Image 1 (tube, rainbow, N blue to C red):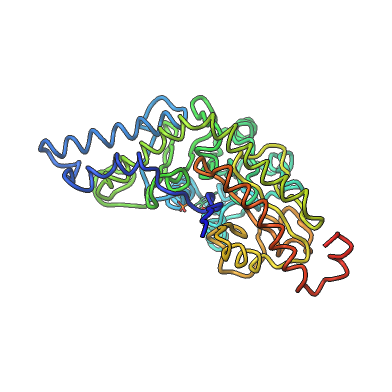
Image 2 (cartoon, helix red, strand yellow; image 1 turned 120 degrees about the vertical axis):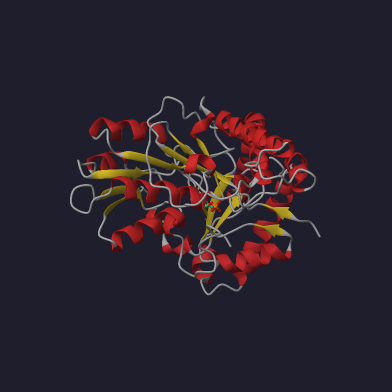
Length: 397
Ligand code: PLP
């Protein structure tokens, strides 16, 4: 049976070249890079090379601004909790701004801070998924210690103008720290953090062909935060814990490969994504595009199938070897409809039948042709057993 993986926003396959680069550090060169002997120096050198590769990937000159973490979730927690622990004060510095469409690894931290007495302003999006920037800026006050707006949304692929938002916020309150969740932007669009007003920026290796369990946080020079991993002096005492050399090497290699592949991502991957999207929308009267933001990453589309249950679509597609998702991997397992699509006011008729297809540079033309053929077949089969026969008939099914 074919296996067509269209869930690359959940995670990606490890690139063979990444595996090759990391293997020596799992096998013969396992020395702890903090030790003094020759193999340790080789490990330490490999870590600093990876730091340079990640700095290059994020468009920053000084690689000391890159901190290795275990994942995107840790990077976000480090930035948010670290800033609040450093600067927060429940009387005078108690306000944070974010959006309704952030990933759960950001929203859950804010829910927790709210319980502790911090005030959080949640900014909405319009029905296309674009952010209400005016409303966001109107919320900035002297008490705003932190603002965080993701760079690209994991469910719809919407891109938010991270740098513009950061600089506008700083004009109102230069002391407000800016955290940007860049997990879904990295490897999909160019990133250049040098000379921007972004203070913290998170990435996660497994979204761009490194293994799971490695991430990074850019911390702009001069920014203080209270570390939450305490222990040894690794990462300048900002993130204790023995260096994960093989995975750090993998992240560096994956970052380099992703930089090299960016032109392909922006042209070919986008062409395949558009072909898939148009191929599905043109065949089904009940298919509605949810990914409608002005700018979006090249690999993602989210399509709502009116009057059809999303979980059933996924099960039927799975039978055909097509792997997609109905939202964030972190919210699947819950029957609540996506908070991102709800924020976008996607009508309830397609809210429960919305499917995200996310491609990678390893997606082939054959994969897309097969999916364009099979998705309409599945929807038509499910339409026959839907209780909404009249509505579906009117839509041509
Ligand atoms: N931020 C976004 C936008 C994501 O999509 C994800 C993962 O899906 C994360 C953060 C969390 O990253 P990780 O899985 O590395 O913890």
